[in-house]
Image (cartoon, rainbow, N blue to C red):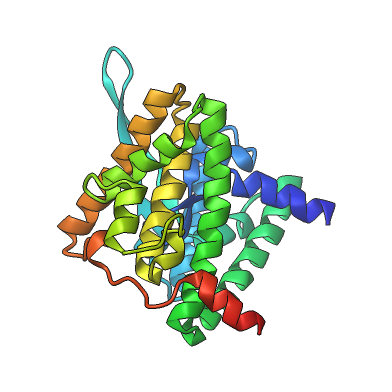
Length: 268
C-alpha cells in the first residue's frame, strides 16, 4: 500500500487534465520524475516507445502530441522540444526505460494500474445514465474544488466566494454564482453544481482543474492575481467552446431534478 501511495504521489503530481477530462503528462516533467538527467537519453526512450506504439496499431500523434515551445534566452530564442503524452504513451515509455532504475519499476506499476482503471471506467461510462454521469462528475468537482480552495488559500486568497465568482464570470459571460442560480430558478442557497447536466459539469470541472494547475505552476500569489487567473481561465474555456461551435454553458439545459433529490431517492 505504501508503494502504491508513493507511486501516485510521484506521477499524480505532474498529471494534467484536458478540456475533455483526459489525463496527460508532459515529457519534460516525466523525464525529471523518471530521473533522466539528459533529454537526449530520454528522447531515445521516447523513440522506442513510439515504435512500440506503432507496432501495436495505435496512432503515434494521438499519444505523443508535439508540445514544443520557443523560449527567449535573453540573447536569442530557443526551440524546446516536448511532448504531450497520453497515459498509454507513458506506459510505453516506462516499459522501454532503464529497468535498472527503481523509479522505472514504480512507473511501470503505476501506469499499468492506471491504464486498467481507465479501461474499466470507460466501459462503465458507456452503461451509465445521464443522472449517473452527473453524480460521477459532481464528485470530481467536489474533490477539485477542495483542492482548488487549498491552493487559493496558500496563494493568499481570503474571500473564496469572490475567487469562485471570478471563474464563473469568465466562463458564463459575466454571471456570478447568484446570477446562475437565478437564471436556473433555484431556491435560496441551492447548489448550482447540483443542478447542472453532465456536459455543463464537465466544463466546470475543466475550469476548476486548469485554474488549480495554473496557480500552482505559475506560483501565483495574492487574492487579486488569483482571481484574475480564475477569470482568465474561465474566459479562455468559453472562447474555446465558441471557436469549436459548441453550446455555451448558460445555454445548456437545467436538469429537472437536482442531484440532491436524486441522492435522496437512491437512499430509499
